[in-house]
Image 1 (cartoon, one colour):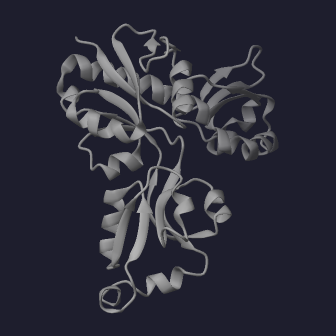
Image 2 (spheres, helix red, strand yellow):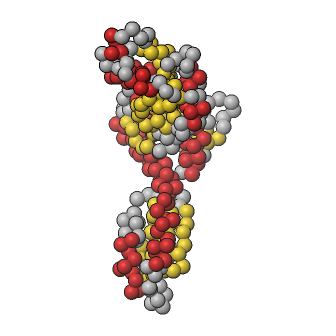
Length: 294
């Protein structure tokens, strides 16, 4: 098999992706000042690219697999295989307008947007395809302005509306903007070239990579809960234990009850522990998990 070509996104997603790979046992080492770090897997060749370039390069096959924001996959209408949603760097792509202008702009949609004497909306965005689709669906008369970052500063002098990614909304509020409409949610995804997925050797390597990355994400989302349970409380306790499949149960030495072990969703543990205690569990231990492979 020729080397599997893996693209990593430069910028805000990079550190999170590298951390996941490291937890999966895949360590990157800087290679001078270039954008080709070395990975401790001789079958994988890594290149760091701007996020906007990644989906199309994966579609064309110059990169076999990549981590990419879904926003740029959608913007480029890239024909790629989506393998895994890492749920990292979650954002929403939104249209935003100055506070107090939302109703007036909305009223210009449909036929009204074409027939009144109002000038066309000046709309700034990095996302040209998504923006044009949204505005044309809304029936808004507009002029598109291509931005290259810091889109929020266009309003009000240089644009009447922007389309941009939003995490908390703090940046929009700081610039006197409010959400006009959400276009789509986005997060970090693993994507692959369609032809690479048809190659037996590359497909197997890609599947292995997806599995170890997913195991790290699942490990982050779970905690291992262990406890001792009296014999007469076992059947009462098991139904409240939200495990992956079935809990592991073992007899305690001396016949004093059972030891239970289960991987539980991290966000459920806080409420679960008091309920377990009420049902008779004791010696409750909670451990973090490095990886979970179902």
